[in-house]
Amino acid sequence: MDFEEVRQKLKAALKKLRVKDSFLIKADTNERTISHKLAEYLQEEFPNWNVDCEYNRHGYDIKKLRVTHMPKGNVELNETEAKTIFPDIVVHERNNDERNLLVIEVKKTSNTESRQFDREKIIGLTKDEYRYRYGLLLEIAVDKSRDVLEWYENGKLSTD
Image (cartoon, rainbow, N blue to C red; front, side, top):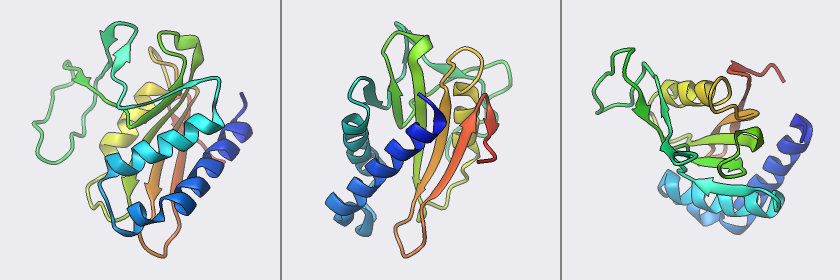
């Protein structure tokens, strides 16, 4: 599936989220709540794929990455340690790295924490071992601003 098709399906799912669940966004509910609803709409858009929230498996193993920028409240890791990760949403075929299509980290614009940890997760998941074809750091606008979409491919920020 090419990037434009993935992007259009994501946009359609976001539109459904804004229409059907606008209260969740306006009320500034927890990011997990919003991610879950978005995943439901993504499943409609990607019917031949698995859409999972906080999926932490790589086959039967636990997904781990070496990251340097830990979120507030966590202990910094040295570069030889790997951190268990739980991507917010993945579109994939379970237990088949050849069909890891999309990984999404969701933040609300009202969340003031750094996005660096999420960027590092997406970069790590779109290259090397996990090979997700596309990654997205999605900031859901809870005010009158626009959603911010940072797309990644092969471990790099896309220039699209």
